[in-house]
Length: 221
Image 1 (tube, helix red, strand yellow):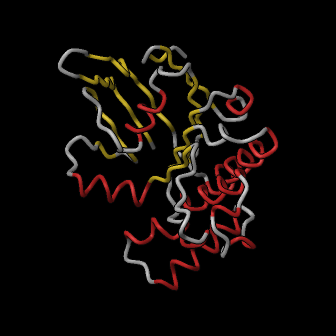
Image 2 (cartoon, rainbow, N blue to C red):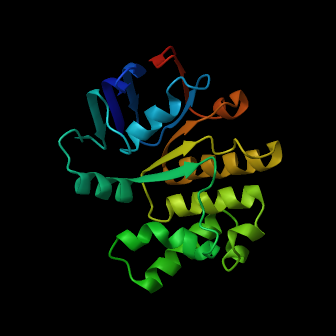
């Protein structure tokens, strides 16, 4: 489902060159749940952004669902992201002025989906994370765990085959964190959603199928 071959990422300014990723070779099978761990600044989020087509490598090749993307135009990349990839972030990124249901519908606005179908899919996604009774609430009325569940519902509303999660339990206490992790495991188990999760939590990482460790931009495990 995801393939990275000899991927390197270098950030350059006029005076400094920083090697963020060095010779990453990573293959994630369909339906696999992979964790990425490593110290702060080791390249975890950079790697996730490259997998999610939000950034491009300086060298190497990325393929999603068997399709190399290095020659894709911006519009093609945007379409692939919208149709194949869902994103969950540590800081939720919900829009406070929109209701929970409207937040979840957002990714569908970029598809040819009717308003009625958007609402149906949002209701279905919210039901899958246990928030059917919160559809008309606003983010400010929710707990941190509930906000993260809304973010997961938004990520899966378009039924992506890949879900990328950047520290999804990082801002949550252990109880809420385990609830969110249970939802991710359920998505992986019941819908064969391929999940790549960046985490600092060894306990969460060891609940997944496989663990990859990064150190100073290199893959060490």
